[in-house]
Image (tube, rainbow, N blue to C red; front, side):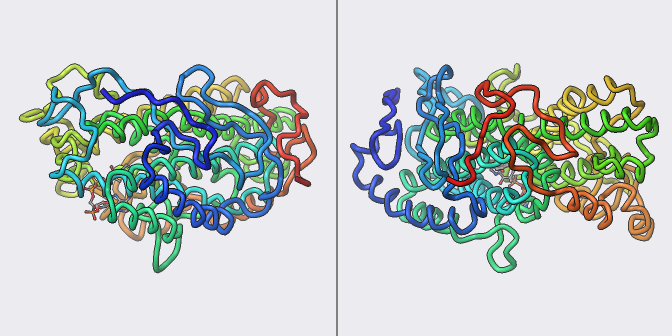
Length: 483
Ligand code: BYC
């Protein structure tokens, strides 16, 4: 079993991977570090680099007390390499090698597959920081500004986590991949990020909260699937990343929830009963519920594309190899081999969307997507619809059909409305603004984005949070703007 190593917090790179005893790796990481800092200064948060930000930093891998809070200038954040503690006698939990001891080194026959998955995972982390680059300028409060920066520094730590795996286990190829992670840019025409949704813009704070609600939730599902990996260093890395990821989703859930709360309160105060009375609602300086629905439709559908095709031989190979499992694989009651098993998949057949039993091994992307949809749907109820119901409005936010607005997989070739009814190209063009934000909707939201920097104050369109970060009081100065 791999030894648990205490966290070394004294060197340039805090770690619990014994970096001091591995000079070659330490040199590789130390020579990657300046490029990473340069990337951070160029494409990380715009402005605020010299501000003091009240941030959480991971300092231990024990579930209790794994992080400390304190004021930090972001370029001085301690981006550590931390793996969850090893599990005694861990075995490969699924696939053809099920029951064999988990790998501590890369199995030669699966090297390319593993490198690809780690690179894809690594690529999403800096991509999201780049997407959120300009948001600090228009933060609705210091509390939210701090949360944005918390997400950003932790995504950069997740980049470090993947770079560690690439450099430690993949030699020269790994070092080249690590350089490329700093070279690609979100939305760049010549050198874009690898996955579609990570090249989209995050132009305003509603988009940021939707992104952390929907796309970080894909992060949760994918990290869970990789945390099951038979390649133990990947499993341990992902298990620790999941601790941080939970807070990112909280920011999205509660962020949209606070927008909804503010809208409902303002509508009640103005005596507006109809959530569709958009002009009157907007005149109150809050975001109407139908616009929130359209934004949810957009971000949900973009995120579904991140699960790849419903039927995928890549996913089957990764499972069979013991490299990428299912969500909560170790809690599923089956043979964990899936040979001969089937899974119901939504397919496009003769112009109709039908459910069809497919080989379960090929349908693993679909299964993970189903788990994701269930998780997202329950968060929509708990965090959003409860607030609307409590305010007494007969309105529900819903997730659109999985065939809606897709660019990857089974439904990429068709148009469907939010209920999953197939539309002709003309009908889609005519009606798409019923489901997706129009330029006018986006311009309205953009018009609300003005910075609020006084401690304890919030923009007109968002309610204060129920509690402060680290139990701080409402007027706490989460970011000291003057540095
Ligand atoms: N865009 O068999 P297919 C996160 C490619 S988010 C562009 O259908 P597969 C985070 C695919 O790469 C989680 N290309 O799918 C959140 C393949 O190309 P190659 C990120 C796409 O391979 C917020 C080809 O199409 N982690 O952490 O089974 C903030 C055929 O692929 C897309 C992971 O995703 C797309 N949307 O599954 C910060 C985990 N979809 O290889 C961070 C690691 C597919 O034939 N990645 N393609 O050239 C994976 O498990 C898989 O790569 C995917 C795709 C699930 C993404």
